[in-house]
Image 1 (cartoon, rainbow, N blue to C red):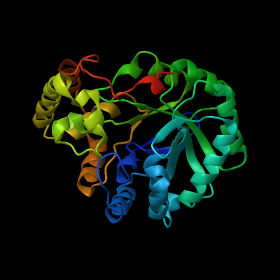
Image 2: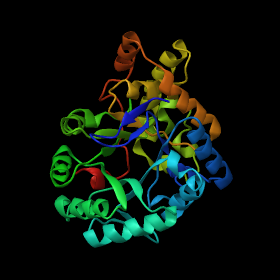
Image 3: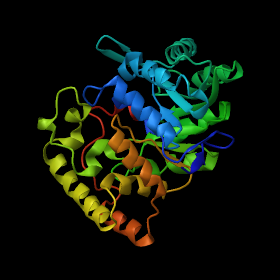
Image 4: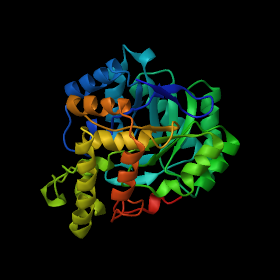
Length: 324
C-alpha cells in the first residue's frame, strides 16, 4: 500500500489506516478473536496506521490493540488519545497538564508499550488554555513517551495556537462526502501549517454505503441509533443522497464504501482516512480502495450528487463539545 506523511517531519503511514473503536463498543458487541485477526490482516495488507483511544471501551480497546500488536510492534504506527474522561455514566473533557501526564502513563500500561507514536488530544476543554495542554504534551515528547502530537476536532484558531507551542503532526476530524465543514477554514489552516488531516468516519458511519438500517431498527447499543442524521426526515433525505453515491459506485464497478474512500484520498496526499471495522470482509474491501483512482468525470459526478451542504442533521445529538 502507498504511504503518506503525517505532517512535516512526521512518520510515513499507510494511505488508509484502521480505526479500532468499534471493536470494543458503540456499534454492537465485538469479538476479540476476530478483532485481533482483523488487525493482523491489516498489517499483512500494509495497513500500518492503527487508531485507538483511552475512552474506547473505557480502556479495553487499548488493551485489545496492545495484545494484537505485541509481537508486531515494529510494523505499526500507533495512535491513541486522551481527553474524554468517563466515570460510570458521566463523561467529561479533561485537558489539565496533570491529567495528560497520568493519562499517557495509563495508556502506555494498557497498550504494553514504551512509547506512543502519535498522541492526540481527543477533545478540547476550553477552560484550559491550549498552550498549557500542548506544553504538557510536548514534555511527553521530550521524555520519549510520545513521538508526535495530534489534536482532534479543534478550530483553525486553536490549531494555530497549539502549533506555536509544538509542531502538530496530525489533526483528526470527521471528514467524508457527507461531512464537509472542515473545508472552509480548518483544512486550509492545517495545510498552511503542514499538518496532516486524519479523516475519521470516512464512510459516515456506514451511511454512505446505503445499507444502514433506519434508527428504529438498530439495537440500543449502536451509537448510530441516536444520531440526528439517521432519524426521521433527515434519514429519508440522506438516504437519497447515499443512493446517488451507490449509483456512481456501481457504474465504476466498486462499492459505495470504496468510492467514498477513494474520493477522500483524491482530496489531497495530506489526507489519511481511517475507516473502522471489526470484520475481515470490510477491512479487505476498504484496503482495496487505496488502489482506486477516480477520473475527473467521476469526481464531478460525486460533487453534483452530494453538494457540500446537502446532508441534513447534525453529526452528534449534542455538538457543543466539538465546536472549538
